[in-house]
Image (cartoon, rainbow, N blue to C red; front, side, top):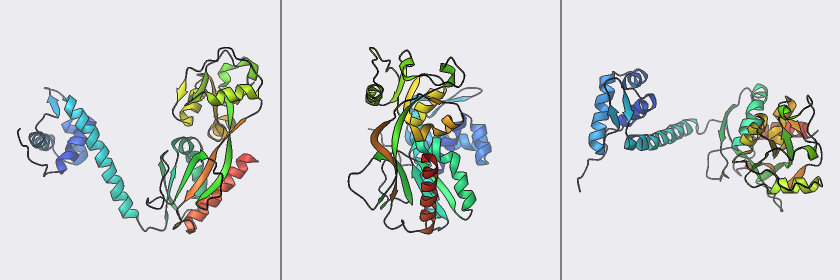
Length: 300
């Protein structure tokens, strides 16, 4: 089996990532402040070390090979992780930086549109928001706090600061209603697609709660995140059963209408997860207080 040398010139990976992103040695050179020939030469050396071609070279353009595309994905992921780690180490110990991790849907539909209010009130705090759905171990991570959507704990936990019990509501685009700004009644939705996140089981609870009989409910559209589900409803794809918190901004702007009737409480809600070492930091306390005020306003 042919032996290939280990990679000794890691700067070639930067050249490759840039050329792959631009599909051009010339544009990569402009970004890296090099000539196109220098970028091309670096990548040729990288190809020799790897033992396979990364690009197919045409007279007027270049294109990634199959292996080149696969390698590009790996390189981009690793360089992104490296850049984030460098940023993390540079910022470590800076008391003015607040590192928050929140779920994708909550970050997109609730927190990001409001967080400017917090920074306006706390101009000395530099906020870093990272979207992630996994439960973080804050004792070993460098986040100051996490906002998560999870099942309500049966027993008190000093590391969990419960914010609210979430309810599921049925919403739809005004375009589905025959009367302007008039929400469909619960008995009018059976002819529409019933959009849901994951399983349609909560829709079945909603139907029972409204004492309805749907012989053939249309559960053909499922989404991985409630934020995407809300956007599908805004686009008029059907009636969506969504967390009220995620739909609030679109309800307030009349991009969505809520079907009247009982909501569904399903044992889930929003909470703050704290690190025992950082819970009492001034920046963490300031953000936690602001967040609770925002939720109280929503519930009032």
